[in-house]
Image (cartoon, rainbow, N blue to C red; front, side):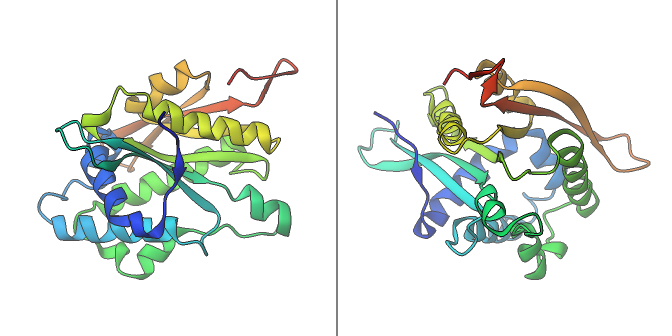
Length: 236
């Protein structure tokens, strides 16, 4: 039986591999990192650096859950095939109150050179970051103290259609029921929208990310999975 388990700092290279091989299937990756093929060393360096923070136990606003599976190429060795990154800052917000300032791994990466990475279109990168923040506040009230947020979901192409993404989402559903949280929020890409809809996420709004004066744009969907629907616990 495939189960979700916490990612460890020692998993950073395997997790970075999943992200770099999978995320280009998502339009937002091309939008933010159009020069990744010209500067693969920057692309790997800063992607790995971001996940070092996500996996760092001292950055406890974040949890990375992974699924291991047997390589379909014939090897019996397990490898990390699917990953999810969750904003679990509700824990520190409950403990420290409304003035708690959440940790921001992206800001830490910027301090170490990420703001000048050569693989990125910085205007698009900033528009994506700022546009998501505005959408969070408008549709989710920020990442509230009683909310779980799904930041990243990725499965290696060879391991897709095995139910791994569903298993990772159900991990989050179990958390919000166990912790009596209100909902899971996600900004869905076209790649993830139908999965979330099938699992019972409600569509709240279409969000357009666009640099002023440009025709190129990115479309995301603000979605939410509520723990209670019509006074009853939502179906798992």
